[in-house]
Length: 552
Image 1 (cartoon, one colour):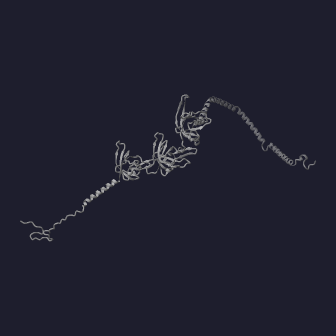
Image 2 (cartoon, one colour):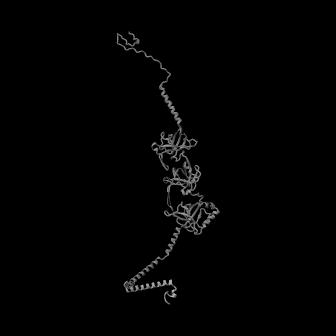
Image 3 (cartoon, rainbow, N blue to C red):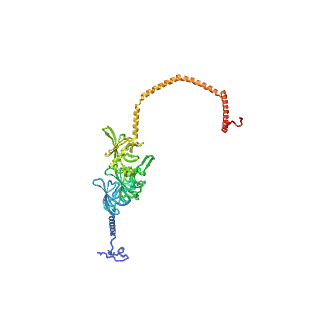
């Protein structure tokens, strides 16, 4: 039995055994040395770095996040969670996280995550709105969103109280909190063509805009909020007058046609204007939120304060066609008030109709001296003054204010020749007597003439005229048959007479020669008389003594 071979001796040369084939050299046994344990494995460095980066991102995310707020909108049109941004002056201050419906399904709730820089927007008076392409009175806005998409605009508030629930605006605010200027309140009778964003002018320069309006609680007018930007707000004084500058003001007076408008924009979207009264400076600057009266036009605004109106009624006995509510009450060219109501009344005693016209009259418009000297309305002295004015002919009269449109107005004037009338000073409203206008008087006169003409017997006159014409025709026939032949004979005899006279007066006739000689003799005689007259003028004594040189 052969024993297994022992370990191969270490040798670089191959073993040569004569009894078998050559074998490869024997390799040395590997020496295993333990690795040092003081360095960590590189495999664990990568997860550690990733963990550190994740922690850093979490810390950064937490430190950069601001508060979360909820904004309520009517619609979520154009808003997308994770994409829609919240911007202030085109700087991102937040992003939309989620959009949900309210419980009553009337609006949407948009949850917004504000950034650290946007935490100042989480206060009570902050405002938010969706920026979309819009066309309004102030122009076109939001065109950039056609490419980038809608976003939520923000206006930072200044309240110290924090807030997380907001009601978004459906339209962008015309004035943001960073704009400098003053806000004022205007009271007017009508909104006219004014809208939010309508311009405000000072001496035809746009200086602000309308930021809001509302109807008065009693329904008698409107209240507008306007904003005048700095530095133009310094021109709004405590004595400033405001008026509607909307549309086109076209007037026809003694000077011709007058066209007045602030700008082309006011013709389309309306506008307001303000200025100090003529002859007065701007005065002290008006404080913020000061209230002003808004006039219907510049003339109405520049008029002095009217004071309390006097309610008056006038009963007319004529047609009121052409008279409308708002027509002016005029006193010699000064507008004292306007018509407030037009009615009709039946008097069963006289079985006739009267047309009562109610109006408001402002006595203070009669001038400063009248306001200072006139007694108070309703006092005994005031009643006596009114009775004296009516006694002297104070009457109301309808007159035509425009020949083209036939519009009427009420003229209040003194008519000294008016029929006597009285006034009940205790009645309310006060009733003033009236007088027909000149046109109505002319119509009455024409009617009176027509009645007189109707009494003229035109038929009898026509018959008499027909008889006279028949007699004249007979007369002409007799003239033609009797008088005309005799007239022909007379004309023939006259012609013969004129022929004889012509023959007698010819140049070579004897009569002409005799007349010529007589004229020559008359000429010589006149010359002798002329010489005698000259001699006697020089020698008057010759009438007594004779001519010098003559013998006695």
